[in-house]
Each structure stands twice: as structure tokens, then as C-alpha cells.
Length: 126
Image (cartoon, rainbow, N blue to C red; front, top):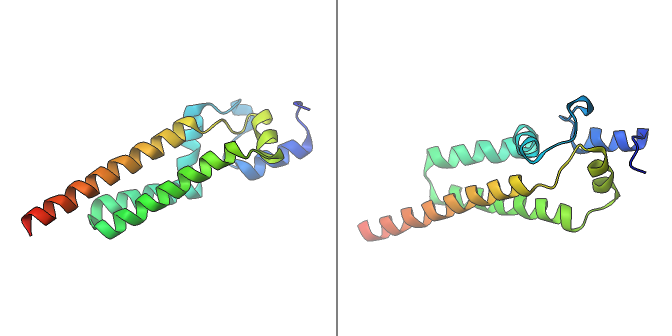
């Protein structure tokens, strides 16, 4: 069951299109890098940069909400692993997203603290 089969290879094509089997199994750092070059990761990255540049509380709250949803998606993928996830894991095109999830939690925490600090400063000044 762990041997490469056409069905399993098709799973990796859909789950992790940026992964090449010749590169070997995905590590935690590979998973983090691959996350940020895939559409969801790029959206998160662009919106996080925009939140830093715009410095609007409402936009930062939106980005934090998106980060929390992405974190929940990462965790639920592993808690409720299905056959697709198991095939992709056995093929080596995905790894447990521990580093990716930890990085997203850290970004979320930084934005949350910065937003809280900014709103507190505005209340004191106002």
C-alpha cells in the first residue's frame, strides 16, 4: 500500500502541485516553503504585508480572522485525515504541518498584540 501507484501519484498532483517526487519526501521546512508559494499561502502573505502597510485595525482584524481560519484548516486536515491525506503522506508530498501551523500562530499572535497595543494607544491619546 505504501508503494507508488498511479492513483497515489494523482493524489500528490492535486494536493501539492508544486512538489516534485525527485525532490524526496517533504520536510517541515519544505512544507512551510511550499505553503507560502501556493495560492492560500500567497493570499495570506500578501494580506499580512498589506495589513502592516495600511495600519488599519479593521483590516488587521480581517487578516487575523483569515489566519485563524487557515490554522483551523491545517489542524482539521490532520485531525480528520482521510484517504487522500493518508495517500499523500505515504507518497511523501505532504508532512504534518507543525512548523507551518506554528508560524501562522506566531504571525497571528504578533498581529493581535500589535493591534491591541495600537488601539490602546489610540484610546489613551483620544
